[in-house]
Image 1 (cartoon, rainbow, N blue to C red):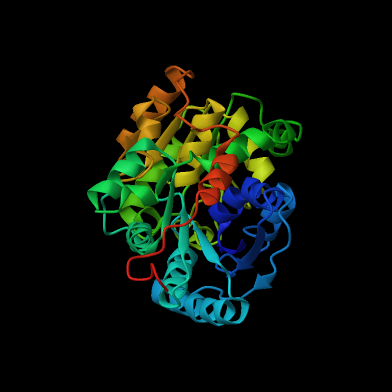
Image 2: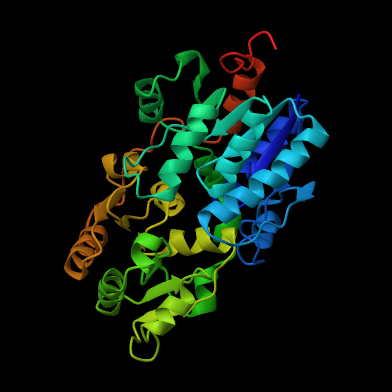
Length: 365
């Protein structure tokens, strides 16, 4: 089968890392189309190197812009590519704008869409990612789900169960396959930190960074944390922090440039706790046995809260500090969710072997 896999942002690169070689070994021609949604080398190129992912066959250079501009430019470029290349199916990954663009462009051309990480829901339509997830799932011919609950969400949205395949969390497979290599890098030493004696933080979602009052609470909590806070800063967040004067006045916060995938896994593994608003980091910390505090109104990774790896708090200084205290003093042992293992990509291959059910109306096309 000739497959085009659409990627465009950090979470996509991590998820296709184990998938591409598994597809190739099974005899599929799986080619990457990189939209360029993340175009900075620190947010894109380094992940291809760390994960040993083949260079994309196509680089579409979409770049930044509003959600509509970015999605529209990616959709136009992908449509042209699909018309020229005639793939048997298009795989879209996760919930970024490139995911939505790929699903729209392929479905308009009557090309089956396969959604890897289908069915996750935050039930918050203010999140751009929730819109992307919902639309991509409604357009998909095959839904590859990371959790049992994700499948239930799809059924409740009238997705035919024959299209739903519970394969597990491909992000988890990537963590397990690269964990030893990550630990060998001892990334914390580069920042003068000791194992278990710092908090790792990532904050980049607009619901936090675009609201000065919430950001002030988050930074205030970091400043008062009982351990030093290492904060790799997303490119869009750094100017916002500078506007708020984060720097010399907050010695407990150590702001650094974004790090590659292996260094990030190493830093998470060695941290005493993690504070984040990232969906992927919630999952990675769950796999690594490091307690997490998620600063968001809600999360589509509810399974991490259910197993005890994660706690959800509002962007209020006292709530963040309370959540952090619970994380630092609580258990570091919990049951890993079902199918969060090294066989996820193999289950994807097995699902493909069973055939793709054509979208409604195209059965005889």
